[in-house]
Every structure is written in C-alpha cells, then in structure tokens.
View 1: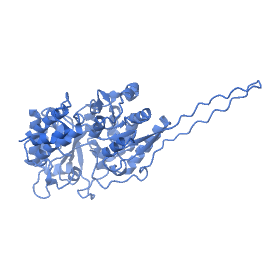
View 2 (view 1 turned 180 degrees about the vertical axis):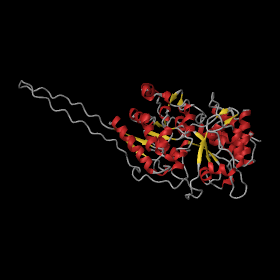
View 3 (view 1 turned 90 degrees about the vertical axis):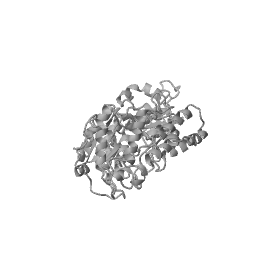
View 4 (view 1 turned 90 degrees about the horizontal axis):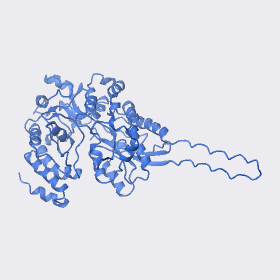
Length: 491
C-alpha cells in the first residue's frame, strides 16, 4: 500500500539483516560484607542477581529491498530510536529484522504457524486486521489500561483503532498515518489552462474534481487521463469514495454485512465506471499497459493522483518515468480530497505493530510496541526518517514546520492539507469485514474486476456479490460453497 516504483530500491548496507543489539553495562557486584568483630563470621550477604537481558525479535515492514527511498533515512531513524530505547529499557535486546523482500504477510504467518513468530511485527493496513482475525495477536488492552497516562489514547485521531479491535479490545498500535489528498501537476494545469484546486477541506467538490479530470484527457498516443489512484476495487480506495456518498462498503453496525446494495453506493459505483470507461478520465484497466500509478503521475500521463502523505518523499527525492529513468522535476502541490454528496471524504491509513499472541516475553514486546507509537519515535521519524506523517495529534502539530525545515523545497507546498485533515478527524481508516481478506478477495474482487476493470458487467453485479458476504459470515453457506453461489448470480 505504501511502496513506490521510483527507482530500483536501495539495500540497507549498514543494517542488512543484522541484529541491532541494545546493549547496556551491568552494574558491578556489591563488595563482600566486612568481617564481624567476633571470631565467628556472619554468612555472606546475598547479592541481588543482575537482571538478564530479554531478547525479542522485531519484524519491520520497511528495510531491505522494501525500503522506498534513500537507505540513509532508515538507518538514521532506527539508530536514533534504538539509542533512545536502550536508555529507557536497558534490559531489552531487540533483534531488528528488515523486510525480506517477499510477501511479508505470508512470511510472518508461516513463522507463526511453525511456532517461531516474531515477538513484535509491523504491517500495513488490512494485514493488521488479518492477523487479529486469525488469532495471532496479543490483546494489548490490559497494557494500554495500565499505562494509560503514557499511552494517551486520546492523542490519536478518532478512528485510529477501529480496525484493530477484537471484542472491544485493542490489538495493534500505530506506526504512522497517511492522510490521502489529491497531488497535482501544476505544469499540466497551466498547460491545460484550468485553475488549481482549492486548498482547504470542504471547498473542493466532486463536481469540480470530475470536471477537472475531464480536461486532461487525450485519446491520441501517448494516452492521457485526468486522475487515478491505486485502483478502485474491493479495498480502501473504493471505500473512501463511497463515504463521499454517505455510505459504507462494510456495515458499521454489522461487520458480517455490506451496504453495497444501497442506492447511494450503486450511484457512486456507476460514476466510477463512467469515469473509467466512458469519460476515460480515470486511469485504470488494460489501456495502462502495465504502468502503475506512480509511473502515470511521474510520467505526466495524469494531472492528478489520489495518494497519501507518504508520497511526499517521492518528490523531494526525485521522480522517474515509466521505465525508471530520471527526468526533470515538475511543479506540484497538494489539495484536499473532494466533498461528495455525502460530505468530505478521505482515507486515514492504519499502519502499525502488534505483538504475537505466543510471545514468551509479552511485557518486553509491549514496551517496544508502545515506544514505536510514542511521541519520541514520531518526532525522530519526522526529523531524520522519511518524514512519515505521525499518528499522534500532538506531534502532527509540528509536522509541517519540521518537513519544511528538513526539505526547503516544500516551502510553497500545501502540507497543511495533511495536518488539518488529521487534526479535524476527516475521513476514516480501511473498513474491515468479518473474515475480511476472504470476503474482499474471493467474493467482492471478481465482481469489481468485471465491472470497473473490464467493463463486462453492470454495477448491480457488485451488489449481488456483496449479498454472499453476509450469508457466508453468518454461517448460511460454507467456504467451499462460495464459488458455486457466485456462479448462480446472473445479471
């Protein structure tokens, strides 16, 4: 969800897969007691044993071949953080494990199944809930309640923990947040002769957005579209569009069910289909020729891109074209996501870390999990890391100034759009079904592909597939019956 096709990823030569040992000096043993005045000696006093270091494993989401920018940012971030962590927790030794460059979800789950899972693991978006639903995460609520003053749960945006709760208890802590906005190419706007989008939340309407997108369309080679995102499918990208129509993909009151049959949902889905296949203003499908959204945007094939604050680093580090070749940077800025008929919308990402339910060191794992969600870590991340958007509102208040201090090229970029979107609790995180991965991948995705990717079916097909979700989650049909039930749907 957060990677970039900007250039070949740099490997972490300094960290690699080595352990970051949090070493501390043990205090000297107490001297033996002085002899008693009498000739009969007292038994020697017992010396309190030095606390043994507890070693825990931390599976990171970044690092290795998965790191998205200059390796120096990541190296300095973790060097400074672990120096801080070591001072505060000298009895804990952390084995930091970078992303192996393979499917991280599968990598972690296979270790857990084998009985050798990492004590703490860091993941993006939907995989966090997947591990919770698979029963692989430690319930963090007792620790949060015990350390309530330090954790300060009210410092996070309003819906931060919604996807991370099981039976009302929190199972993950944030790593960073990313507020989705509209990045746009000012050079292309000037070329087409259209005004830049408004700067403040609530001022940019969907009608304006749709009209702007249509202005950039070119049907001769090379093709050009108005806008895009990672793909309107059975995921968070479609969900925040739906919320702009005042409806949800997942029923907020019943995660077993979907609201995709609501009239508002069908209206939104139909507009998506029209922009992709009729107006040709939203880039998606076979015409892209395999180009991802970053190649489209960096290659000036779209005027706008819906993406989160994690994309800022792509601009300050330089851009590349579809083949990964460097080319001249263009002028750019950021605008808020649009306001639809149901109100202002955006996506607030949920990237975080949890503790394995079978960790042998739950207290120490919690301390690491908590510290990566602390104001101290987030300030270091802004100042020396990739500048990822913090999850804490208290740290978000210094976000804009620190990024501009670090990268002066951002002086005239509307970074306030990210800060204000989070401080105002605009939008929400990814919505999660019961059995989320299965419901989205096996039930909804085939319908979304036929409607929005291939234009082979009307939007009503998505509604009919969504009905199967409720029947499956409520036990009315079994897993092995899903395929046959979907084949029965005729539109």
